[in-house]
Length: 383
Image (cartoon, rainbow, N blue to C red; front, side, top):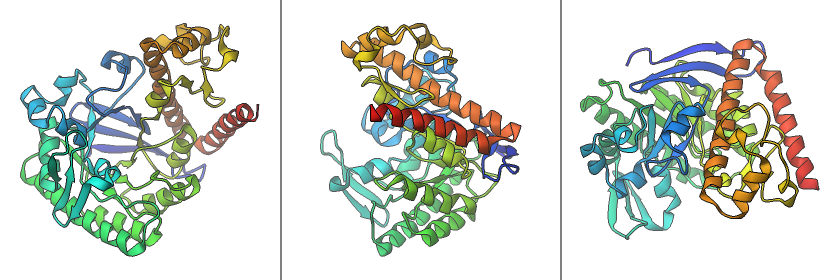
């Protein structure tokens, strides 16, 4: 799909690398920067596709590893693909399964041709290499498919990281060749490469430049938020994005908090995903411009206010007192309403970021937004 990404504005006046873009896919246009709700098992937990549309979700994620184990990518293919299977007609990005294999380190063996591992479900011996990963994502009908890569742990030795970067580069090229030969790319699907390198700036640059030379439709910064402190995480992102193509979308995988996303937008990142909004919602945590609040706290027992003003969705018609009641009694509706709110909060934050990049005042706005959020969070922690 030629000209699939259009850069509409940059924060040149503010001195950040923030970008406002538009990404075209087979199932619709995505306005960037964007947050992508995570639907690991073919569902964004506790939220229906109609509710996702209501709160402005433009693209969601599916998980290659989990969906291939259950119910299998072949079954999903035979039932019309992942969009039909889960009732979502918008764009879907699927990861390669590489991070799940990384997180199951005791059950896997990294080889030159891929990763042999044991299923966490039943212990069955399985294998994921470039050919398998691309076949699974073609079965799913992914709009954006991720290459398989090796995610180094943190901390890691330089030699081990260099080997992982080299192996990931070889796998990425194989994935792209397979996607081209099969007609996947020609049919308008996108394949994104993943730049690794851990905490080594020169390896990050090497990975980014080598992958950029392969001319992928998009690129991701991988191997961040795997245990390192936030300053180191931001340093890794900043060591990678300048060497990725400016005319292709950039995606930082698996994070982050609202302030982290705004900081990474300032570093030139366009796309984010994270399970955090729905995961913490199921425990009664809600995001506000003044930091997150724990609705299980007694002080919200008779609070008549909505979670926060100005965020108009179905959850906004309910009081903090009612939402606290649902959370403390473990009612399923509580998880749904708070998940809707938190996802909408993240999506609305991205909409605000897009507007401020277009207006040319992103730098000052994002610093003020973060300061307010962190001050409120610190005040609650101190009490």
